[in-house]
Amino acid sequence: KDEFFSSTAHMEKLMDEEEILIEEIKDYLGLEIKRIEKIKSFISTIESERGFSDYREHLSHPVNQYRLIRRFTKEWLEIEHLLNPQDEIPEFEELLLNHDEITGAAQALSRLSDVYQIEPIRFASGNATKNAPQLSFDDSFKIGSALYNKKEYYHCTKWMSAARELIPQPDNSAFPRYSDLLDYEAFCSSHSGNTPRALKLTEEILQRNDHSDPERIESNWRYYQGKVKDSELDSFPEDYLERPSHYNPEERQRYEELCQLGYNNEHTIRDNNDDSLRCFLFKGHEDDFFSQLGPWKVEEIAKQPYVVRFFDILNDNEINSLERLGEEKLARATVFDPATHKLVNADYRVSKSAWLKDEDSDTVEKYNRRISRLTGLDLEYAEQLQMSNYGIGGQYEPHYDYSRREWDIYNNRRIATWLSYLTTVEQGGGTVFTELGLHIRSIKGSAVFWYNLLPNGSGDERTRHAACPVLRGNKWVSNKWIHEFGNEWYRQCRLDEDADNLSL
Ligand SMILES: O=C(O)CCC(=O)C(=O)O
Ligand SMILES: [Fe+2]
Image 1 (tube, protein in one colour):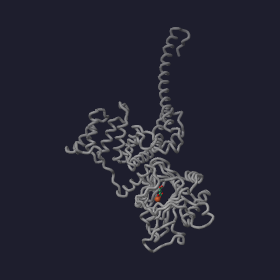
Image 2 (image 1 turned 90 degrees about the vertical axis):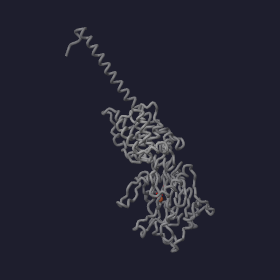
Image 3 (image 1 turned 135 degrees about the vertical axis):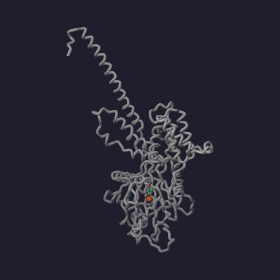
């Protein structure tokens, strides 16, 4: 190494070297500050999105639920990439969610938009529910592309169009740019029966002349051009989109109409006004000590078949305790797949459930006894108490509670259902009976009871029912399914095919 102290001329060289070092360190610091600033800004966005309200209130909005899932697939991932390798936080890998989560959340928002007829732009701009937060154009784009990947083109078109409305101008994002949104929307609309719209959108991309793959756009344009007839160019309705068909369109329509009644939080709504329905105080089936704990408030919801609701059947302590017990055991609710004879996840049932045993807690045991006293039915063969909690847009499409499987028909089917509501859902999330034209709102502490089987033992098809998607709120319910066995003496069996279950 050169020696410097012995010559001033050489020490000047050292000054030069130092200046270079200073510049390099400044550059380094500049980049580091940018990196730190970026991390800080991510963190403060996350903190402000989390809000100051309690978790339940915050997560009652589907948009907040979506944003939470999105943060674990995007923002947190970006923060991880910004950390120096030696600073990596081991928990990160475990916490980040896989892509199915964002797909599930996107499909849930599109289901809510569909069932409640709320255009995506209303979700995005925070007008779908009261005090709802907003979605960015990038969120809308991500929802649209998740739907595109799932080949759900009808909804993809709508979310892409919302993203276009929301994209800031001037458009200086790297991806997606306005032209990319047009590109997706064109593809999705042409797959939803509106090729003239695809052609127009593609023309707009060509005019903007800023797409990263102009050749593909040209070729798309030629393709759409070839498909659209001249006569359609001006006459085709601009907003036309073919809605995916449903295997049972009439029932689907009834289901949606009944669910929509839940948008305004009404309690119990019937299609027909039956004057004979009453509200009364019920003291149980026997004149004993238990009856003195009541009387219990009962509302008749339908007469044929008999559907009743009990109010204030669970107190707040019991509800908290059941929710806590349930929470520990929750697992995704499954349905029986007749093709594979296995229990599988299904889009038509989005919730998690848990089974509680008498031994799990006093509350469970006492509640089961109460159910037995109030229904006058024996629970020896009943299923355990099922706790269910719904997720974003959580729902359970129309079904019967009684099994229609051959084997079950001769073997102790679910004679009755006792469905308890542990939360009041702000919007949506009602139970609807599609054959009866009933909408029952989820009201904390109440329980609905009905017989699934007619007195002659056959399934009562009028009991077809569903859980509407939760629009705003947190929905906890509990099911107690009571079976035929053990009830031979408690509920009269009748040979008369038209006999009805007429009262409690
Ligand atoms: O959650 C509801 O409103 C109904 C649930 C239901 O029908 C079921 O779990 O079988
Ligand atoms: Fe059910």
